Image (cartoon, rainbow, N blue to C red; front, side, top):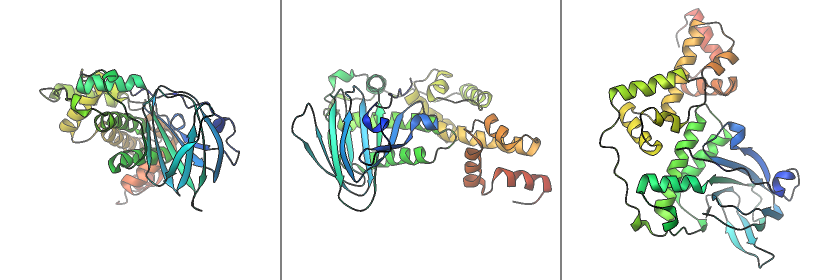
Length: 317
């Protein structure tokens, strides 16, 4: 199962990103290679005159950061309704919802940004069936505006940071986060949590042979995008349960393990070959050389170039 994202909305804010009275898209999930979650981050102008958003059947989770703003919405030229939102405030729209018009203005000199995360209704239905064995249509999905939920905000802010600072295996991280978001939102804000009784997890975790199969698959495909669904298929688990049994067996999430293996492969190539750094990055599944440099600096305290030179000279780290 894949956390199927949805296309970025074709709105006036995307067609005219340079207008000072429109939201300005500055980063989106396609730009960083995510396929498991649709995400888009915007700069909010000090005065948002009018923004047209099309009808949608998908879940939208909107997170605000920065200075507070006043936001209002209306449908079909009806009355404006809204309120103030500030750092960490969330909006949850389950969908389907009709087209609407939005406007707003800043309440402080501090700039404001918003993150829009989308999950398809098909994906939510799959999660509801997989985790609880329940039809999504049986749940009362209640929209939330101005919501304060520290855990939900933490997940969304982590995705925002990943979007702003893309790293290798980021797509796998986004897919895992999409499952976590879907499970948490359905359990916490479906309106009737009593109906949600967890499907029992697998009786046993991964066998040694299954662990070997998954690890070999990862090693053989390090240079390619690796999805949570593809890894789970190797051992016949659902993606949701696969993440749990994988962590139990290997002590790390699939995202963390893949990143660690890519780093180790890069170290080997730097030590044993004279391939250009850009080719090493591609061979190890990094999006480009700067991604590899970022990981090396964070994890090893030096750049790939410095690592190779130290390896050649025999200098200690």
